Each structure stands twice: as structure tokens, then as C-alpha cells.
Image (cartoon, rainbow, N blue to C red):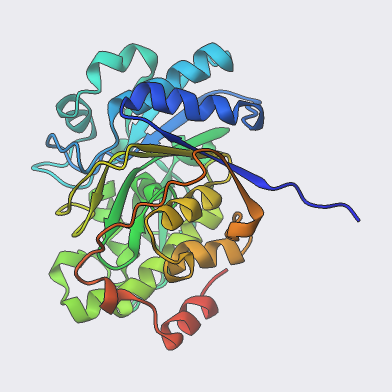
Length: 337
């Protein structure tokens, strides 16, 4: 009988984001196979203002770019994001304010909000009539090798936000699935539809709606998004993580870890385990694994580097309310692709 190989996830401890990222990538370098360029780096640059607890550290992205150039001989690298929070939301402003500019010679920066939509996927709406589809930025959907580089953070209704959820920054348009008419453009106007209440952003919803039907819609739509595009490599920035009321109002956690894998579901699963949370409780990641997007079983994942890195996170104050009930799991599963 042929045994399936264990999925490798690198977990490396360190305080220097650049050196720790390089060390993690070197542990799995033989797993990283890039056939075509460009390579697109997708960090989390959620906000325009300087916010080191919220956004991916620029040194992590610089290390990824240098690894690609020196070890994989890649010459065309794009760093792309669709920033959704700010006055106004501005990806280039987010890069400048969060000190990405000193590293700009390593990549071509791109504001995804101004990118044209390419691949589309239907969304589930819990409280808004309509048959909508969301469009993914062309640069993301057409790139031959996508790297998701999220910040390790807690989340109000999903528990954690990691490499799968980081894909939301690539959404750039909403259209009517029946007429094909575009009804919203730019990332900040598009991502709200993922939460199931049309253009209403989650901060306009009650806690009951956020932890109930909106949470279920978001989980369904994230898996539908990940069924449409998947990163070929995930690198989770956990040097300085966020716990408590993440993803924007939490507190600093000096986790001092970088997590990397060519299986993004496995990377997210190990991050969940490290945070001291049963992966079964992070339903959107668990169900994404069950649908075949990656490895979700801890006993099928081999950790290379730091074998004992568990450091329990303080969860969001809504976390207990946000846990999925059996009926919510049933709704989630019945609306997956």
C-alpha cells in the first residue's frame, strides 16, 4: 500500500522578522516549485494608517522576495493588496505608512482596488435579496504563483484570520449574476458583501447578526472564494501577533514565530493549534479542508523547525457567541460548492 506523504509546515522561532522568515522558507525550499512568473505577494495591508499590529511586517515580505530572487531565481515579483480601511482606503498609502517603501526595489507595488475583475464566484447572502457574484482582481486570479502573507490575528466571529481569509483583499467588484451588471467596484465596497448583508459593513450589524447569520455567510463565502483561487504558498507573520479583540482592536502578543507551508490550509491549521484553539472550532478552515482545499488533520501534518510552539491566545470577547452551532454548521455545509 502506498502511503501519502505528510504535509510539511515550517514553524520557526525568532524575533527578527526578516531572518526568521528566511529560515522558515529554507526548511521547505524543496517543496516550493515555481514554473512561471510573475509571483504575487499578497500581504495583509488592511488599513491605510501605520498599524504594525494589524498589518504584515514589511521585513517578512522583503525576506520572501529575497528568497524568491536568490534561491528560486525569480525576476518578476508583484506586491499587491486592496486596502479597505482608511480615509480614504489607499493601498499605496498603506505601503508607505507601514514602511514598505525601503523595500520597493524588490517588487512592483500594485493597488488591487484599481485592478479589473477576472474570475467570479457566487456568494451566499443571509439577509439581502439578490443573486450576486464577486469578482477577483485579474492580477491575483491570473498569476501563476500566489503567496498569501497574512498577519497572525484573532477575529471577532471566525476566531482567527490567517492565510485563507487574507484572500479577501483581492476582491474588486460585485455584479448581478443574472444581468452581469456591475453594481459595486473597489475592494472596500466589495468585501462587505462577503458578510451576507449586501453593502452593509459588519460594524453596522448587531452582535447577534454578526455572530449568527453574518458569520455563517462569511464562512461560506470564504470557502467559495478559496475554491476559486488558492495560494501556492502561505507565510504567516506571527513575530508580533494580535490577540483579544482582533482583527483591528486587539492587543500585542510577542509570539515570535513564522509559519510557512505550500499547503495554506495546513499552515492555518497549525496556526490554530499554536493559538491553543481546537481546529474544529475554526469552522471555515476546517470545512475548507474537508472540501479538499488542503490538509486539516493534525496527524497528517509534519512540523519542521519548532515542534513545541503552543502559546494560547486570548480570544475575542465575542468568541464564545461566535462558535458554530450544529444548525449553523449544517447551513454552512449545505451551501458549499
